[in-house]
Amino acid sequence: HLNTRWNFKGNTQGAGFPNSISAGVFIPFSTKSKSTWFLDADLKSDFADSNGSSIVKGILDENNLSASGRLGYRWLNNKIDKVYGIYGGYDIRTLNIDDNTYTITNRKNISLSQLAFGIEAVNDTWKLNSYALIPNKDSVKRVNSHYEVATIKTIGIDLGKQLTSKINSSLGY
Image 1: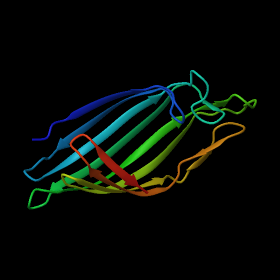
Image 2: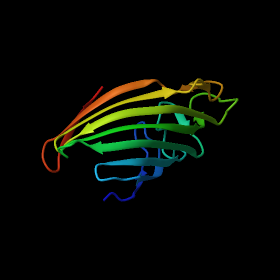
Image 3: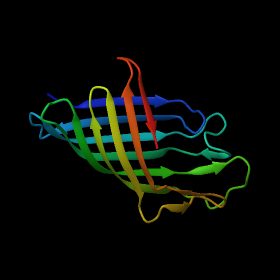
Image 4: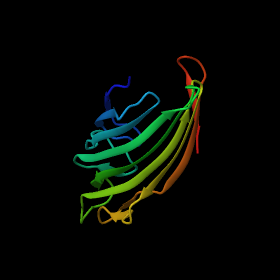
């Protein structure tokens, strides 16, 4: 039996990462003995930088929101020792950037979005995940007088191995 799972996270500012909080939910539905449909969703809020910059020279200003949603399907093979899955979804992020080097004008709140697709195969010791993140047509936007930001088309594959009951490794490209 699969249950709905909630997760909550908080992160403090670090190299490339702003202060943030997030909440997520995994909701299985239409569950049968060897398969289930699911909704996987996250909502995240990045807060203004408080101690220097989390990105080179730029400073995250105000509250920047992002959301991610995936609708997917997972099923067991006949031996019940492998799980396969497929999913698709949508991501959106708002952004507002200031700068501690230049005088910034024409500041804008912008939003970037992308489509997401993936397939996966998992057993007790191995995990294989292939995915594609495809920006919408407006993938480059001017955020102020000095900077443009962009979503990047990403196609990747991750391979993971469970080394012990508490340690796993992964390699991605």
